[in-house]
Image (cartoon, rainbow over all chains, first blue to last red; front, side, top):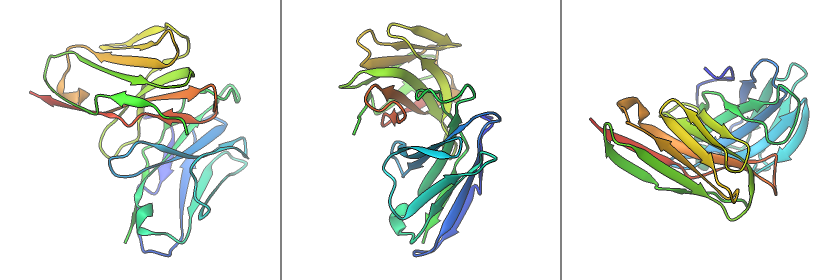
Length: 116
Length: 112
């Protein structure tokens, strides 16, 4: 158990809909990262938040957005969903000692999103 | 963007055999991490490397941070059935420290 929690574990929805994925980091971690993993693909970095502020952006679509709240949990919002958005979405956290840019990341169990 | 070349893509071995996989990059990396992912689960950190030349073990697993800072390998000795899974290398490059870049993974299958 990495200490990172994600809800829900599974999500099935239709094209055009909007969903919200939730992540709670390890106790004390200040950074939260979101990744997308499509079938038989590696992990693609989407976005990082550190202590409530956006820190780095990866290959995140404009239809996707995220935020980190004062209690440090984070939400990833996916809107106007398309079939190709079906994937595993992982959250990771790091940074108990503050932000260094190369902190080891610990991953949650993921949310499997299926868009029908 | 940054790319990590991980090989082999898949391995089929007999229980008890040793395993070796590696990652290379065209750019210099500040950290190298090795993760294992079981089906439907999140990646689990196996070994983290922070210095060029560093050799670190975790039980039957050994990983090294290459001297050139452009490569890393992971060895698994005396494989057992629970070693089955996908192994990913990952690293922070000097060009994008905040972004952890992942290799495409090595799928390990073990025949009992």
